[in-house]
Image (cartoon, rainbow, N blue to C red):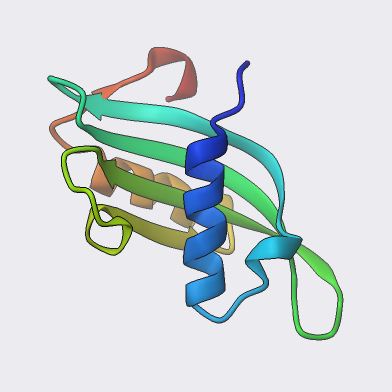
Amino acid sequence: MFENRSTQKDVRTWFTKNGYRGDALTFKYLELYAIKPPGWEQIFTFEVNLQDRDGTMKPIYGVAFDDERIPKISDKFKVAICSDQDAHRKKLDEWSGGFIVQKALR
């Protein structure tokens, strides 16, 4: 599996802008989950270990939406974070409606 460093950077930036330590994230995975033809709109799924305020690392599951047509990151990139896998799965299903979903990741 290849790494998507651009999207990892966008996720780190989102966490930092939302009061977390984006620089301290460690990615367990970040994968393309779904795409809407012709390919500008993409949904990513990820899991990171996040250091909370007391220094404890905890897993966070996330969904990221990216629209490559929009140049400004704050307008094109959205993230939803979940503390458990059930909420993560529901968010993936919600955001990927109308998208082509990778079969291996369903």
